[in-house]
Image 1: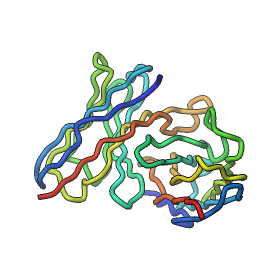
Image 2: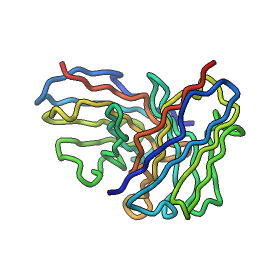
Image 3: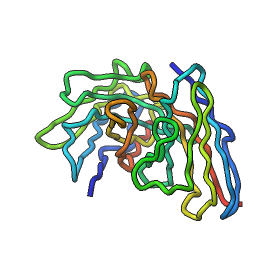
Length: 107
Length: 123
């Protein structure tokens, strides 16, 4: 199975900050990389697919980049509703494995 | 509103069984490949099982193969997960999720998720 490693595991930031989360695959996955947002008690939400394409309704302050093995999710201008856990997932080879998640909380 | 709602979780002893259900509303499940994804306490998301839109093909993570069975009922617009021989390590919040292919069948991603149902395996 392809291993997905996120860093950092947790991150503290303030409203208005710019933050970047990194996801690394154990082998090349081209750009088959998805990002999800999770909040306690809520259904996970797809933010980005194919590394950089927005799911409908996702604010433009979210952006994704990368190809091959290294990917990033950037949130520019954090809003209160953005404090959540973010997970990457490769969809290149089954099983479509996830990273361990990055918890973003308020500083 | 498009949504998935899971049910059937609970406390079960090691070696026991549970059947999870996932009911869809606002869309037709049979159009999608459906999946179960779980999250153990303090851990990341883990794909568990998937079933093709027709129901003819099923897929399992190695960790549950031979113990779990995924199925679907188009008439009830529902997805199921029969979990047998449960172990402590199966303790998790179980989500159902639909797999969509974006950009003309190019890029698969789970685009509709339920809130999950909690399974606790403990004596």
